[in-house]
Image (cartoon, rainbow, N blue to C red):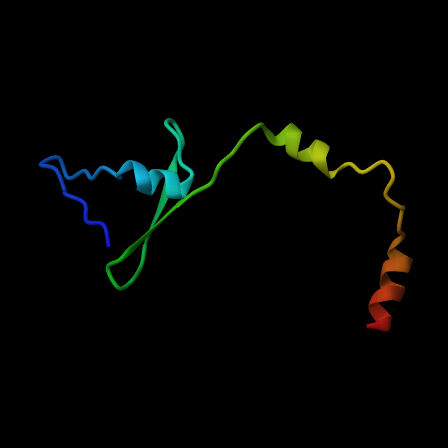
Length: 78
């Protein structure tokens, strides 16, 4: 298990292999969660593009149109 050293300013530096494992690049933010047992979890969410790119990926012009009644009918069969 890798160990990290706390600086006089109370900071730690993650080694390159750990950053690579997270998929974190310079300028990206890393999330840290405090757990009740005094441990931390660290995670990274890679975000490319913006919300418009996300919305555009949802539009499927060839997708069939399904009504609420059709959905309810399928649900009732389950």
